[in-house]
Length: 252
Image 1: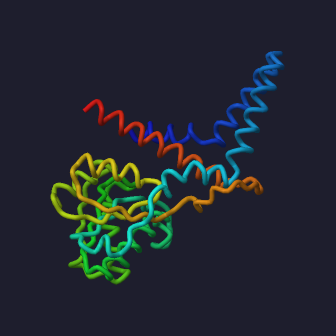
Image 2: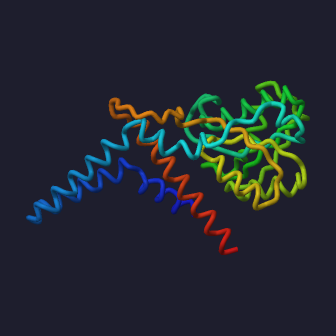
Image 3: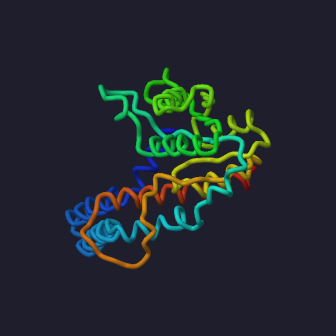
């Protein structure tokens, strides 16, 4: 399953698609099919040009990240716990501790710490042994970081289970059934998180962090950006994940 995910992430990248088209165009050219080679070459460069524009990535990400107004503090105050699903922690290489954390992990955990202090709520972290080093539990590393940030140990509940978003939510439900949960996740995941919560009957309000877009929809043109290409890839992956989840729900 992890291998298929890596392949999917690779194949939906606009950069990879454009390079594949350009490479195939040279094959057609060597085979004396100039018309097909020209079309493939133009298509490859057009994909690269269009999807490297930040405005295009903004448009694709907008429905995922900005289709709902954020909750006000008064709307989330009547909650029982703050839940932070896993993102990533690097277990390889000789790196300082802070450099091992992915940006999405840091933003989720820091936001959880801030809300925990404001609302006086415990923080629940999940995530099993899905990292490069299978002996390391993500949730325990997340708990350690929260403690370093000043969250009292007794206010942190570590659930070392879950290798996918769905299995993490199942682990949460098993311990917090019928509780009112504040979920802190990346903005691109908000729709899928909502779908899983409703499917499992978890009462939740979702707080978004780690935004990949500015929300600007007014057209603008700027220099091509490799970051825009990566954000388009993230958007396409999330749309595929949402589609897959809907299909699985219909099958079940």
